[in-house]
Image 1 (tube, helix red, strand yellow):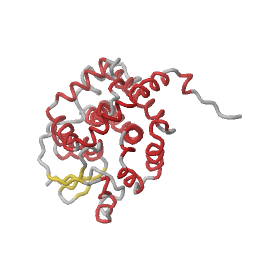
Image 2 (cartoon, one colour):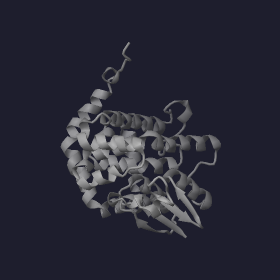
Image 3 (cartoon, helix red, strand yellow):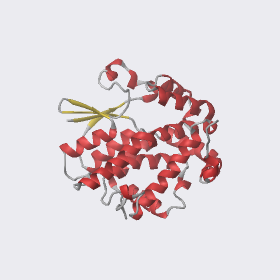
Image 4 (cartoon, helix red, strand yellow):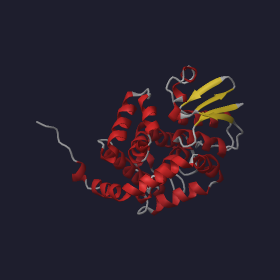
Length: 281
């Protein structure tokens, strides 16, 4: 039996729900109430020392980290395949999934907290219990100072870079030789865990009224539309986000309030001079 510990609007939980849905797998599970800090209960930490979702139990094994879980699912349930067979394409796919783990997820936490979640006191309680000190520091700054915090510009710059990287991949040209040859519909040619890994972050940006990031990138806009048109996307992401509609409405409402300021910030950051830095002699 597949048993998933997850949360409605968690982007990482959405990744694994999407992989499960694309494979047509039946699963059971339970909601971990992040703002009530269910993830920090001793019995949960005994299974997942990181205190995060998702967590998957299967055949007596416990698995954590969404991208790792998704590769496990593709190993154990190989049809339909969600990873390229050719080693080079498989390596490219892993570059994209690694990208989400390295910095895209951090940017999501900063943006969501700074724009929306800071307006709800209970989210401060969740931050107070965070186990990762780097993550906690970013979220404290975002909670206290909103889009004026020191991490927000960096997060938006990273997202704008991501849109360029996705656009280049869909064009087949990159970004760079290491990721060339993808597209025209999906990041590494065929639909894969690379697209699945990034899909929930696109939805989160959309919820926060950041869709201007792809308004001038038609290939990215078309890719996002293809993602949303997949039946699994509705089952795994939209239906669950709608279940937690209070929070998605909060993201949209607060995102609209700062949309123009954030768009101006992004346009400014596209000028290399605006983000230049030199060490003090």
